[in-house]
Picture 1 (tube, rainbow, N blue to C red):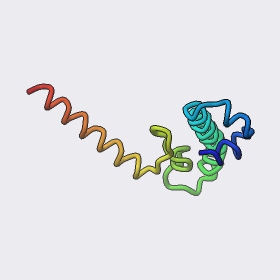
Picture 2: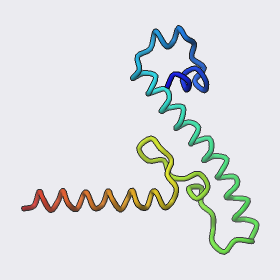
Picture 3: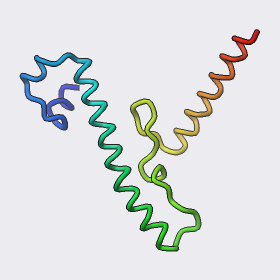
Picture 4: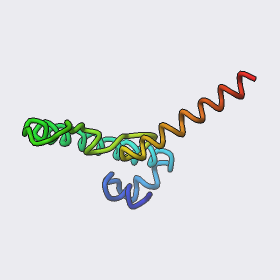
Length: 100
């Protein structure tokens, strides 16, 4: 965590003494999300070029290139599918337990 704070966040050693670990975690999370959004912008341009080329059978989406942002992490298409499947299963189990 400290390396992320000193590296990409460009915090100083004094900042590490001044900020709490929760604040640093928030800054790291925000940095990662900002990087994801920047990647999504670049991927949008790439998707437009790829789709306009006429060489693809199926259109490329931004998520195909950068993944899905879920709970603070980037997931591939298959990981996101499994995550959604597990979440739906949990919700079904909650409803079934609550309805009895």
